Length: 146
Image (tube, rainbow, N blue to C red; front, side, top):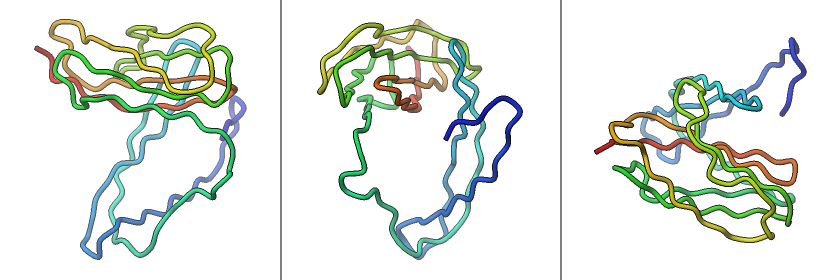
């Protein structure tokens, strides 16, 4: 969902853990600008009472996975794009500052990978932002540093 500047909306999040035990999780609300990323965390508490899924054939999607995550000094980011075209993959610190741009160019549709090394002493929380085909995906990375 994209909102115009000054526009607000109400978002209802249905939290469905997979166990009848009480559970706690976090919802990350992200505002992505051209060169910054602002994230807000909301803590959710609840009990599981169902499943959540995506309808088959709901359209192309971006995917991104970093392994290992949490990482010590380096990780491999595997990502896929639905169509050939411009792709950017950027990493931001927890304050929304751009740390590094790892991908910026045209890529064919399909799977790709890139390695990312954390700067010495760079432990903390990071976000990767993948953009392609008018879609944006954000993933959280935790770095323990060296």
